[in-house]
Amino acid sequence: MPEPQYIDSETLRLVLKNFARERSPLAAMQVLFTRMERFFQIPLPGFKAYVVGGPQANRQVLVTERNKLLWRSQGDPVTTLLHQGVLVVDGQEHDDYRSVMEPLLAPAHLPNYVPQILHHVDRVASTWTDGQTVDMLVESRRIALLIIMDTLLSVDFWDDLPRMLKPILKTIKYISPGAWIVFPKLPRLGYLKSIQYLDQYLFGIIQARRNTEPIHDLLGHLIDAGLDDERIRDQILTMLIAGHDTSTALLAWTFYLLGKNPEMVSRLETDLDEKLQGQPPRTPAGWQPPLLDEVIKETLRLYPPIHLGSRRVAESIDIDGHCVPVGERLIYSIYLTHRDPDIWEEPDEFKPERFAHGRKQPPFAYVPFGGGPRACIGAAFGQAEARLVIARLLQTYQFQLTNPKVHTHMGATLEPRPGVFMQVRRKTT
Image (cartoon, rainbow, N blue to C red; front, top):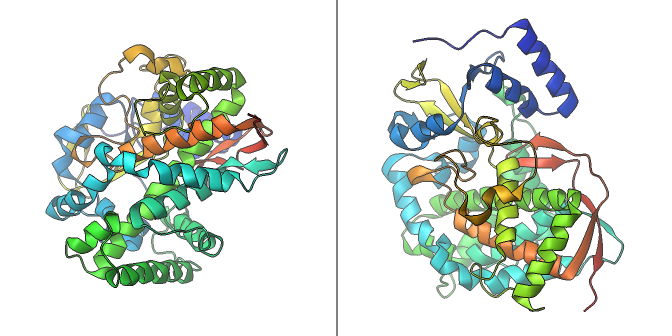
């Protein structure tokens, strides 16, 4: 079977040019993806992961040949941090954790969370003053953290947020791409204290709950399932980090794109006024204008928070005539699939109408939440949260983007850097 093609001098020139222009490895990877038949190896010393994309490769990785691949990768910071979290275990262990957690995140349970979500949106927005410039990356993180701690753990995080934000951000940086990719044995100095501080906080929540009356939330379900404190810590840390960070990125990118497209904001505001008649949204679905879902879906296409999926090859796998050997790292790129010009017309342009009127894409061409049996456990929750947060903020505030130039930052999620700075003004009723 053919090996990955060698990188010729012209391709290398384009890789370096795109990287310098966009300040993001993703721009460089786009060149490799399009010029090397959607199958290449990352040419870094000590890190030569195989990268694939496109509907057929995604289908293989996520469904038809998923049993040849493992999520867990010993030595990776994500595994080191989450221990036995549902995200980094395989087989029956994963299925057991998921069966306990999934019902609390299913669509049928989402209406219970609406008052909490709206409460925290209004709470954060109440700290803004008219004419103030806020960073919607920061503000979205505040909102997302308050929501996830309240809805899943029944914890009012408002007073704790200022002191817990730094260790949370430090922990996110610990699992973000960095020098450890090329030098896996490089000491990870400066992180242990933050992780221990966060652990101490979470173990305190678990212990306090064991001494109180049962509450019907995620933490309560984990306790009722008989998990010990360590395994509960692993699951709630997984949800805390993965759940809030993805919502943060989605909200920030949505406001960035809306800031760049004020005519879209006007259309959304008109639709929201017609649907809501000045009242807050009351359900997570069924009320929203189709345009709002189209905007969210297009944002997820352009800037999927989880922009790649990483696996370890347990049994050699053939992808489009290329063999990926046992023991290698295989990455399927959501971002590159979502920008593939063979699938999407004008792939780099913001066009929510792509998702209008039931338009269909090829199966596995649009995979912001993965797919198959291990699709994102919080996909329904995250989309409902985004609808409610965006609708409520557009209903109550005007936003004007003040920094139209941002670049993609490959952290634990895909973030707009240096931030999404917007001038806010409260609407008068």
